Length: 275
Image (cartoon, rainbow, N blue to C red; front, side, top):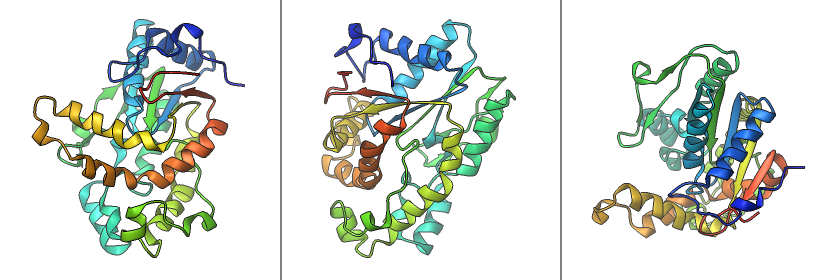
């Protein structure tokens, strides 16, 4: 059974300021206790997984560990590849993020290099230009003791075919009425993602109170990025539509990951750890 969080950090402050130091130390202690070279942090959009990953790496370095972060976002397909998918399969595949819009071959090669103790260049994706940086600009590391790998759908299994029939939101109802897009993404999740998931040595799941908080969390993130320039940020309606691209797999994660992850931290709507 996963260990319960230490009571001194239950309901402590959480992102955007960061998780409490005791929680960060607990996560790193768990990774080290189990000899994890690849430590995964899964969480839906806005849950604080990137913040926590950076905190764990910073603490690991103070302990003398060679540590770095990698996000599943760093292996997004570029706009050209997504446009080809949009033309050949379904227009919704122009939007990056859902299963099938990542380069899982590159991801596996990167994780394997870390696990083997080789020097490695870690891919990086620039969301401002919607392009992966050229390899010459990827950070180069020596052999790593710890890679903290974070992503919204880590180890989420595909759904059964019967679950794909009914749309889960307005996006699927109106823009994918035949179910082509969601079936293609589900098939990609079943086919291409188990291989990188097997490279994860230990997984922490940040469990939100439900999918209903995700749009608000995402909107907070977007507004923080354009602080002082509110007109530059997306509207609430745009964010609501965007997160619908992820709703089906997110709900599958909510159902399945508490039973798959090695540890689960349950978060309240303010992203505080409550259990």
